Length: 317
Ligand SMILES: Cc1ncc(COP(=O)(O)O)c(C=O)c1O
Image (cartoon, rainbow, N blue to C red; front, side, top):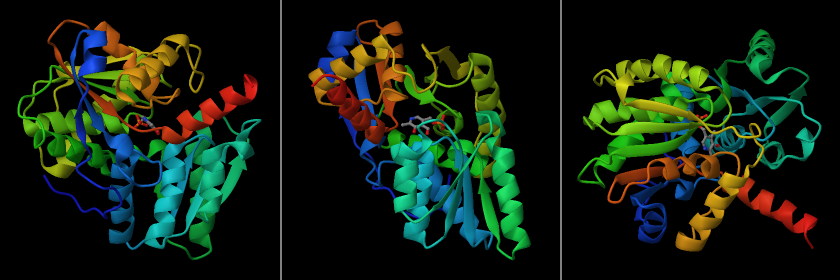
């Protein structure tokens, strides 16, 4: 299983035994620390960005057009990666009342990306970005268009390669692999990766922004494309379980996620973010059964976690 890539992250990321958190949750728990991947604060998305930039370069493109929300870790990572690779990045972000103050939009500008805010609903941001790409092409550029979260077969191949990396670190497959799902590229790549290494592990996905049906449909569409691209066996949808963990809504912290973030910090010194990983980790409670081997894929989100605690401090002096 190989695919062209440019190196941004430091891999393999650590596989950490987490006995104290595991015993608090009645699980034999390990954590794949992609939050420590070492490229900006992009976490697992670094794996997708490596694939996408390599593809853009292979296709002779001379700039990247990305899109998403102003709080997108992926967009911030893409902007930094473009700077590192010497490819200009244009980001098209949907406007929110606090958009210009959100750290990812801010970080992207610092990295030299051009950032446009457009007044469209989240689900229409790709059309707005395609307009920008068309304007750039009309002016003579060769833009490479990246949809939300970089969740194409190309981007998702990065997570599939992550499972290959994991299979070299872990001799027996876990019963469950738990991960946060937004645009679902990470989960699609992981499902393809599980089939590639022949593991019967159940992929337990925490849907943080979309319904269970939408998330499942995206994974079901994308995972086979990843497998085709990498020349791997068909992924098994029967190994996929998706749960709704949106709580009060995407980007809004919920009490059970906050409690899980406190527990992970107290037991193992692991920081979970309120948008993705803390909500995803709440699924660990559902799997509780002594001795069950479970792997939690820590996708990152560090900047949002620190930003949230900075806001907390402002509110409680
Ligand atoms: C920290 C973190 N975890 C999980 C995800 C979800 O990944 P995906 O959009 O591939 O489902 C994201 C998306 O940006 C993220 O930033």
